[in-house]
Length: 355
Image (cartoon, rainbow, N blue to C red; front, top):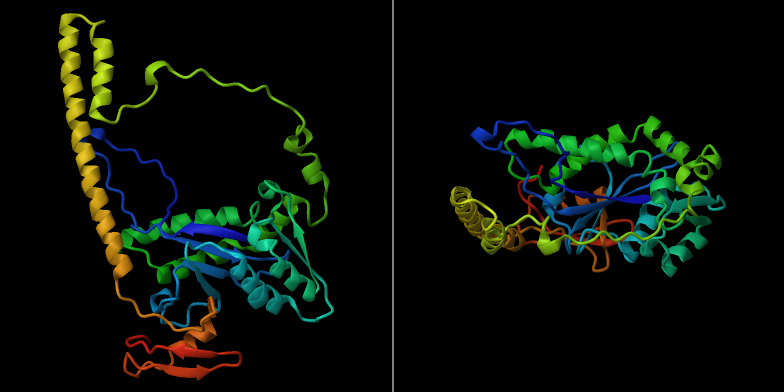
């Protein structure tokens, strides 16, 4: 298992050729940089359902499309969109244990990195109680030994970036969490092909077992090679620093003017004045842009949203629990209806307009 993080609006990097006389091209962007983490787990043959972690204190109805197309994933939330000790244990119980425990006496191996959420006492105790044996990869070696990192995660990021780029020209200004789920569902199926998954296991030498895959790697064989410390001399007076402020332009002009002829000095002063004017305008525009973005962000944060009610200690929801919370569609908005499920009591806030 491993975590994969996304900025929902990220796209792939491209080179764009244009005529500078007509100005740079207009780049369409989604305008979304919210972070989301996804816990994925797979064996040589089987892929488990993902565990989606969004930023937030409570799940909102807008996270979930009002359609049956969305698969039965687990949706969680945290202040920064990252995993933590509690969510790691929740993933262990709701996904790994429930989907792999066909027999209580079966023993299972779970290969994972040494993130602090994976080595907590509660996480290891849960493994012990369910005949699970966690194997922790060496620190700073996941890029060589983690089957997900060297296998399907690489094309997953590429496919997602291209999918976001294709989505942007359709005219939509933002990419919300519900749309993210749809896009990720499609690219996940492409990236997690049998070929990519087995390639990841094979490249690490874990399965089929092949220790020479790593032991003969040039980086491993030359691990004891040392390189003398080299500290390049710093450039005098910030020679290689690009000027960004008017006073920096003035300082550079004063350094080179006395070495020029009178005619060249006049020309360089004109160029300097133009650069200083452009720099001043750029600073003013950046300041205004920062204010506008801050206002938009505050509006987004303060925007009234309809929240799906949950148990006090519950930090994740399955699609079954989401549908239960939406079952009171025709009731008044402020009415709260309680539904009993097999495990817990879910307080549902009816939401109008959802199919």
